[in-house]
Image (cartoon, rainbow, N blue to C red; front, side, top):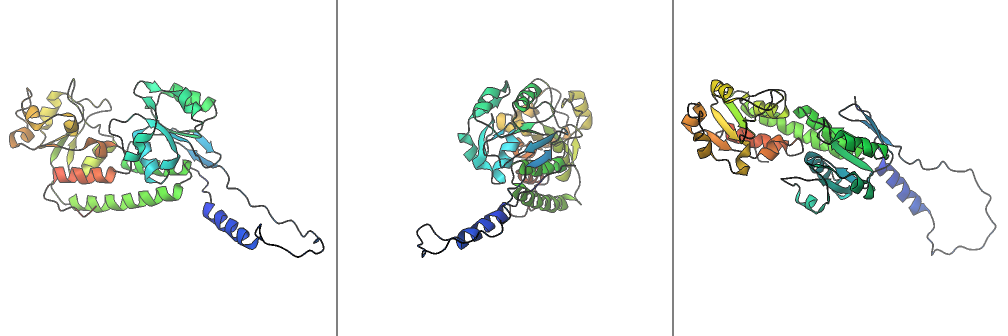
Length: 324
């Protein structure tokens, strides 16, 4: 259960404007008179208290004031922060092979697949770091940052619902919880609408190729990716947490459709059809091999709805999708 305190900034702003309107301006002249007797002391305006969240690894994290220098150490977190209106507060980010949104390109890179530059993050005076859980962000870097007093929130989405929860978690940590919940409410409605379009359709066996350069990689059964394929109206061919599936397993599963998540990296249907051992698969014999945008399908952020639309278009091309 995530606990959080939501600041009432708009109420305080309204109060400040009322007080300002009632106070005399600096240029206003007043007639001399007796010094007034002090009245009862008015109650002070209470500053919103700190926000407390519990991240995806069970850590309680306190963010004492609205963060002004946020560091994002996952590509999805970068997208989320910009989508909820906190982009101006993002001071740095992780390297991203498919950067989004375009405004994030200006940000300095403080982390790559080789590691995290803790010193640079500290030099930026970061007051909030959003990092990847389950070791996506090196645990020693997280420990160092927390030891230096930097609030670090760990996120890791293993389902669509967790991805939506993480948007709200990041929103709370960034003091933008209302905007985050508006976004997730819209996304949930879109997911329901799109899922309804495929509910009564046949469910073809679909193999989603993440990569096949050294081994064959596909979606684990318990993953947001497999869930997306199911919502799109398919019977996904999946594997275990290793992401690896053997050619023998794949041939036995006999996909009716092959989706190339690695299509953006130059893999073509012709190359797939020419691979040794692949010719007997139904998807190969019928030519049902289609490239898709892996980033929007697999990145657990605001564009998951776009990813679901892309999957439906690839699996059920006759379905008429609503505008969006």
